[in-house]
Image 1 (tube, rainbow, N blue to C red):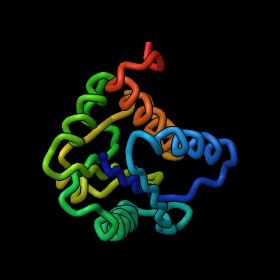
Image 2: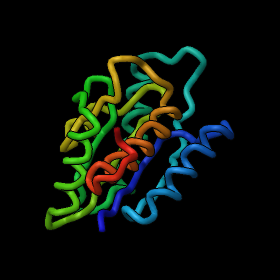
Image 3: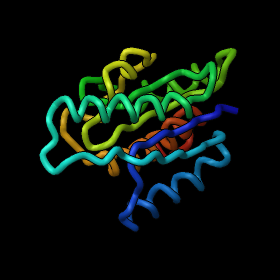
Length: 160
């Protein structure tokens, strides 16, 4: 069974996002072993300088790296990442599951994204869309796509 660790910078505060993620966590229990790890977003001044932002991103990357599953594929969600269809995403999950190390780390950064150093270590840079979404919504979208990916693999009617 595929072991997925979803590492997110920032805590979900909105109840509707919490409920949506919880629903997909429940659905995914039969498909994979899912762990959700929330890390605190580094506090910045009201108008942070680029240097302050980059320092914060490096600090967050250091905390993220401590939480990564060893020998797991690293997938960083970022705006410059690769666009992927749901079917292609399902293939990514299937290939990871059939690898000698069936572990995948999905990383969602905070409001300023992820440090370049972390993205450069990733096996896959994934973009959810050419549009911009709040990072909290990205967590809901990723959870749904994980579920959809497994349903595609199983050939259920969920994906039409």
